[in-house]
Figure 1 (cartoon, helix red, strand yellow):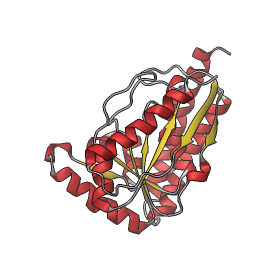
Figure 2 (figure 1 turned 120 degrees about the horizontal axis):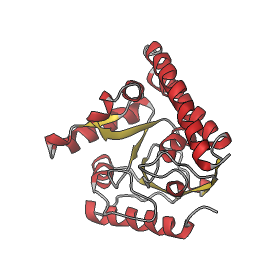
Figure 3 (figure 1 turned 180 degrees about the vertical axis):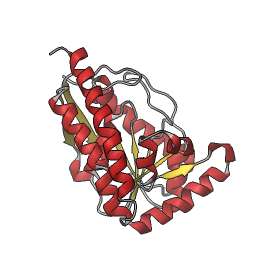
Figure 4 (figure 1 turned 120 degrees about the vertical axis):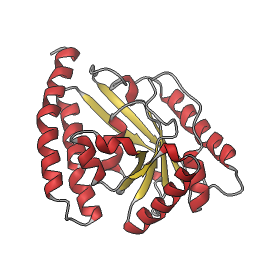
Length: 238
C-alpha cells in the first residue's frame, strides 16, 4: 500500500474513532483530573497505534536519563501532530498551554477542555502571562507538568522561526526548570498535509535548563539553541 492510501486509511480511522472517543470523554467528565487525563490520552495511544500499523511511523527515544522526577515545564519542538500525541503518553500528565480558541473546535475541543489545559486569551496582552502563571501553579498542585511549544505554532520540518519568550517567562515566574525536547517527526507527519511517510521518529530529551540568573531573552535563547541544534543533529528520519 502506498503512502497516499495509508494516509487516507489513517484519516478514515481518525474520522471514525474521534467522535466516539469525544462522546466517551464527555461521559467521564466527573472523574478526578489526572485519571480523566489518562482516559482522554487513550485517544492519543490509539492514534499512535494506528500511525504505527497503518502508516508505518515508528519511534525511538534518547536522553531518558535526563528525565527529572519533579514537575517541570516542557518546551518541545512543534513541527507535527505526532509530538502532542506522543508526549501525552511518554511524560507525566501534561497541562498544555494553548490559545483559548481551540476549545471551540468540535470533538477535539471538547476533549481538550476536559484534559486540564492552560488556556490563554491572547487579546489580554500582558495579562496573559499572569493567567499562565496562576493556572500553572494550580496545575502543578493538581499533579500536572506544563507543556509549551515555544515557536507558538507548528513549523514545517527543515525550517525555523524565532522562539517566543512565553515558556521562559513562565519558568522564571514559577521558579522551575525547563525540560527541552527535540524530534524529527515533521518529516514523516508534516504540517498542513494529510500525507504521512513511513519511518522512525527520534525524540531527544535534553538536560533541564534552570532559569537561575537569566532573563527571559537569555533563557529563551538557551532553549532555542539546544532544541534547534538537536533537531539539526537528528536530521530527517531514515
